[in-house]
Length: 248
Image (cartoon, rainbow, N blue to C red; front, side):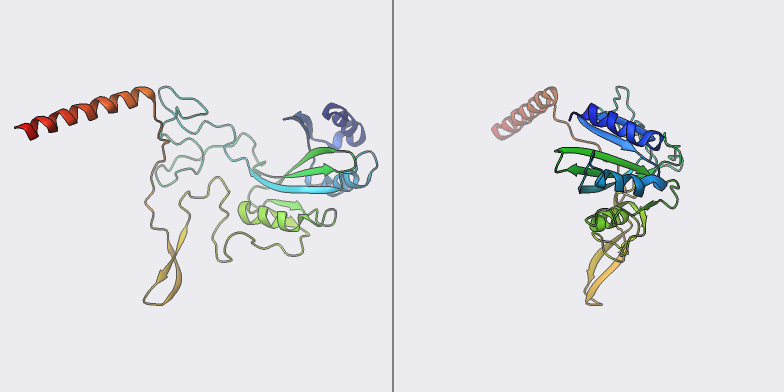
């Protein structure tokens, strides 16, 4: 079955339950509302026409400032290395500019969970996307009763993005320390973090302290052919001066 045929089959079965349905990167991606997630997931797993028996992964996504160009220069582009140092994305460098916050292109649709499904019997894949209705307290139903492998996947999305999966039996951090502050994959999380861990020789134990890294703007270093040629000329000129000085 091709991706377009699967898309048509899904649209016929679920109708208006699908808030969005398309073929992207050779695979079908559908979106449902949080209240329809469990029923849709159960049908995708159990109905003979779909049989998505396996959950491959659950990924959290933060759409803050999605689609915004982060850098601006005289020759700016939205991708690649031809970018400058004027921060445009919300929360990227809050310590340098108090007016960095911007509205996202998806108001009240900041956090999403994306479920990657595999039908072993049908040899096909499907992406199922669900947006949390409230970005201040993003809550999405847990699918652990549909696919119990979701346990650690949902814990990871909670740890890194702060997405709360209601009904999860053991929703706690899995990658960061239990005393970690914040959720590190959120777009407004500081690049240098909030705290650092060091060994205190006086207390003879590991302690937390405010991060000591000074904020800075990160600009990719690009080596271009003309820059290499200019550097070679400068090196040659320096060598000539040193030789003349040694001869004198």
